[in-house]
Length: 476
Image (tube, rainbow, N blue to C red; front, side, top):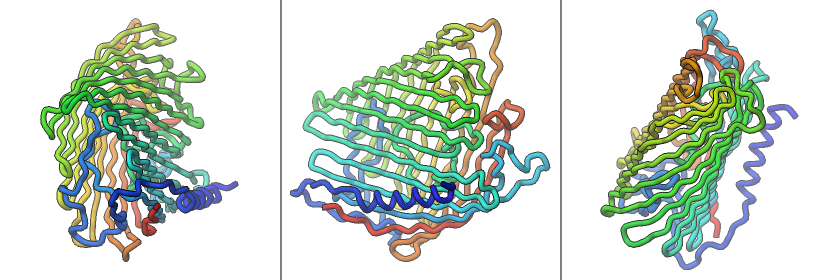
């Protein structure tokens, strides 16, 4: 089957899922409201902060804090479809050739992207299920070898009892390149988990699957304190390109204490590991594929103002135990940080996050020390015009001083930046027109493209699109 046929088939499958998911009986005695229509209707259509339901997630868990829930308490399904026509300034970036770089001129190629999206919310008396799914594909004019399909899904099932709460979640993506600025998923919902396999090094066009699953339980000891236990497992797989498959897993236990209704403190212990399955052969840029076992203790501070602010800052020492098949075992003392911020204005929302960790290396490095920062700003400019701006930066290096080598290891460093912007306007009650732009840039110590990665590259994509939202289908 051709790639174009696969794209059309995936869109039709998504539509079928949207219309054919079975409904389960929600709690019948709860008073609920209908879900909102997705299109912008009025300047003051955003729910007021006092209508939000408080966020009750523990500060020492894997799931990030939120400003609370503004969603409906009624079960519904909301399908939507998107079409965009864009121009790619350097399609050779994803083919590994960096076309146009040699003569200093960009190669402009028209692309067409079709995608379908489904948001499902199912509410019962003591539990809630959420599915956020996107599927689509991109067609390159005159470059059929670059045609691709992509999928992304987030699933969350939560249970709430008198003292116990349990959350089961899964984030999965299937893309033809790194998701760090991937144009096909621009404008879709971002994953809601705090961390997962590293995807911040831009590579050539190689199909990759990334998945992160977790379970998190919280037990309330009294009115101020609780205990949290969580476990996670993630994987990253590539279809070729000399890139390195990896697995990661972890467990974490924490104690949470509420100083007051807004401020919380916590302390947690975590154990994490990284493995490279199948073979000890590493990627084109790695000399070996070591195993990593790490132990960390984190001090956590959280502040929540329902409907307005969600702040979480955690940090502490980390001990990395590395077993390298070529260079032998080694132990390194370092530190780990995870922080996030969401602030909601009346007509805007601001978010930012920062993390420092040692991870699986994004398929390029056998272990990577990563600093990553990302942020977004969404605002309503006028009664019918809204805009969003996102930016990100990642610095990846191979950890130094972690292996028992006779001399210093050569430094492999990748600095990756992205910027994306979107301007949209409703076209009636169920449609939205938009302008979109994405910029990706990467610089590194790798001299040239080849073997799955590019050293220095730049890429611009931009164009126009159309979003059609069906009215939410209520599930009774």
